[in-house]
Length: 332
Image 1 (tube, helix red, strand yellow):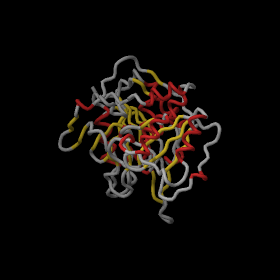
Image 2 (tube, one colour):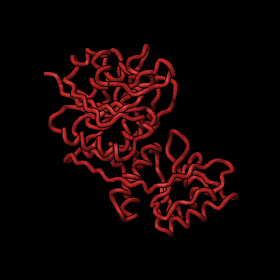
Image 3 (cartoon, one colour):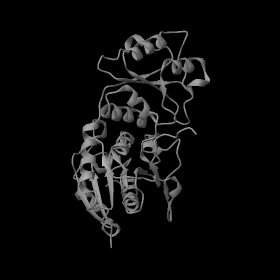
Image 4 (cartoon, helix red, strand yellow):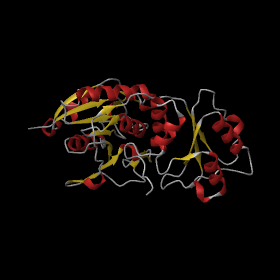
């Protein structure tokens, strides 16, 4: 008996067509294109398509994540898996957010997209979609991203290339599966959910992000009163300038105002270790917390998620330093 897969289309390059005059990519009738280009999908699974909205992924925010979570929640118990087609630019943000929202999700939720539209020659859309549907039929109970023959944990993934089909990577966590002649699922790397499925759908945008660069002036960065958390993207293992500017004094003031301050790194791989250097160590002593080995996408959406769940800074701080959905490697 074929598995029942819910295919949610949200927009993005995978479902676009190229305007013959301008060459610009525009949204298309995705469902019609899907049946025309990949009719054999019906042999893989019994697929039901739902299209809640069609946007460039740059337009998406937590209200769209809430819509997706509500659709999935309503269908749990009647489907065997979910595939979400999505623009690549914010794919990792949506995957990270859904991983926190869909607590103990009992079925695979696999996000995918494409670098070239479904109906174009040499498109990667066909392979990504067929393989995502096949993997959604397997026993993989977590939120994932499938791209270019690799299945990755959604909240461990970042977009790392604009032009290559191999557009995503998982810098700090091994692959969940690879697709070749056979599908190889690495079960030791999968989450092992325990407990009841529950959707947490509250978010807050009371987050400000400060990206450091040499010579930057901190005068231009003034978090508003309603901002409750500041995420600092520092250098390397977590260093900031001490001899120029007044960032430590500003951080101290933000902490006194009750804001949570989190230190992350601009580096794509590895774990941030602020305690290795004087500047990072000073921040830790002040009460700044580390993002560990989380991706920026995972850290930013996690803060927005926790700000939506709790009013108390200590609860936000404590939960940020825990792994909620496999997004963080906790120290022994």
